Amino acid sequence: MNQRDAFFLLLSSPLLILIFLITLHASFAAIPYGITIGDTNFTCGANDSICPSDYVNCEACTDDTTGDTGAVADDPDCCEDNACGWSCTDAGVVCGDSTNEYSKDETDSEGDSVDNGGEEDCNGSGCTTEEVIDDENNPACVDTYYNGTDTLGYDYTYNCADDGVLYHPYTYTSNLCQHDISCHDTEGDGDDEVCDEGNWHDPDESETYCDAAGGTWTTGSSTSDTFNDDYDGDLTNGYCDGDDGYYVTGAVLAETYRGSTSCEAAEDVTISIKDMSDTTIVYDSDTTEYSSSWSYETFTCQSGNEVGTYTVTLAPGEYYLVAEKDEFNTVTRSIDLSTMTDDETLDSFWIYYSADCQSDCTKNDRICYAECEGVNDCTFPSYEGTSVATYCDGLRKGYRYTLTEVTDETDNSVEGYEVSCCNNEPESYTRDYFTAEDVVTNCVENIISRERTVLVNGELLTLHFVLFSDPKYEKEGCEEYEDFRCDVYGDAFC
Amino acid sequence: MTLDLIIGITIFLTTIVLFYYLFGVDVTKTEEEDAASALIEGLTGNEYFKDGELDSTELEALAGMNCTTMRDFFDTNKNICIYATDNNGRIVELEDKVAIGCPGIEVQEGTICGEE
Image (cartoon, rainbow over all chains, first blue to last red; front, side, top):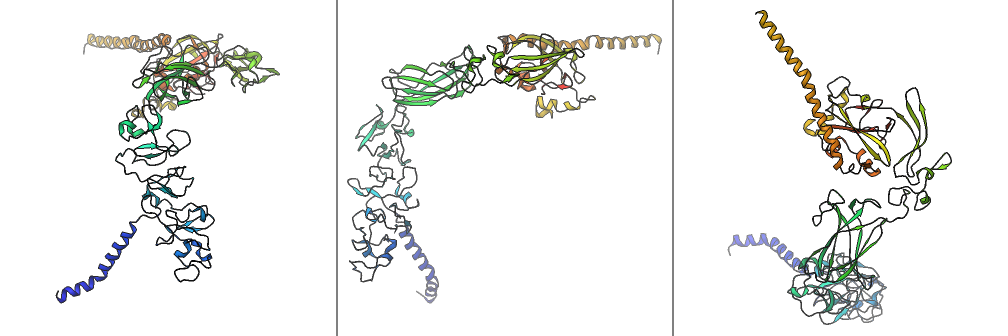
């Protein structure tokens, strides 16, 4: 080494030291903070700095082996069985979660304060490396761990495994669950399950696994995909999670009004699949959603194929299908799916309006009923001291009932009061004699009218259909139609 | 230019004018008439009119249509306006409108069709 090399090394030595220190620090930093689920667990009194933060309150530790006086930071004496009341030397016990320490404030492995409720404050950062997630799918601090044979440590109810068992990081050969190791209530019973060995494992049922073929929980030993698969063959959508069967789809129609022969899509109908011997058992349920293109059937009760559709997941068997919606009678149908070997589509069915009085004073049949007064918010207004129910009873909803009318001979018009049945407020009106010749047409050309007599809400009226060409806004007095073509034909004409 | 030529041109021009006067308007008007006839005939298969009755729901939907929607609904390329009269010929409002459909004509005291 010549002088120049030595000089270079001398100058670069601070940099080399810095690199060395960074490397050293990184190697320590790689050690996961918090509690490790596995072979290594922090214990008090060692070098893990998990000593009580209130050590200062320990005036003297009886087993003072380190020669210090009282308690000092990281004093292992304070974690021994001593006068301060700490008992942290039991194997696997995490400082801060011991029942012996409940009333003490502590500092956890990350130096964060631990409240006296006993839950270690990991703030998520440490726990993410532990691959344990709590009931609310958040990184959880673990106050107990399971080494595969024995349960060590203490249970804490907020953890996923309410029975006190938490699971190893999932390193099994099956990777089915590795992407989702959070707790899920796959059975929908309010009790979470965790993923273990590529399957959902109910901690409350020791070593029980989902038998996909029957959709029931049973003691299982196999962890093969085939064993764990559902009927639908889709391994990505969970196990024993309600999809242990085939997709059963159907459609629901509703009568347009009570007594009508026309139909429309029945939306927001609650569909429940129930056990035939015990209808309190519900296997699956769904709420119908609008579909404009039901291709399975065609209907004569409507011009389109608009239905409300539902999809449930069922294993082969016989069930009750119950359809419920406000204002409609509940429909219960038995469905036989015992021979089902694939996804199934059921025939559509109708739901029918109930004959109860409604708030519009009809019985869902578009007829006004005086007897509905006071029932289900039906209230008829009065006109000159007489209830409108007197006039509208038995008439179609929307019928224009004339309460009073006076003829003005000078201009051949009539005026008076009318009510639009059933229970609208009476209104005044003026009505003039009018023909197609009276239509003002100076802005259009080529106008022609045709008439058709139609019952409008039960009243016979003549409808005049007037056809005409586009208005010419260039003409004097027709400026208001300048945007006509733009509005009717679109932006190209603006 | 001879007198014969002048008379000939005059007759020719007069004939042309008469032709358009007598037939030109009728040709256009026939188009409207055809559209109107087709519309009336189409009512028998129309969703709302096929039963010869308009209920409150149908009337509300009809009155809520704008010009474009109503043209589509009646399958016509002509502008359409609908108003109703009672058996005395007096106009009856449809969902608080004197007439429903396309603007362009005025019905009763300057009310433009389609406006309330």
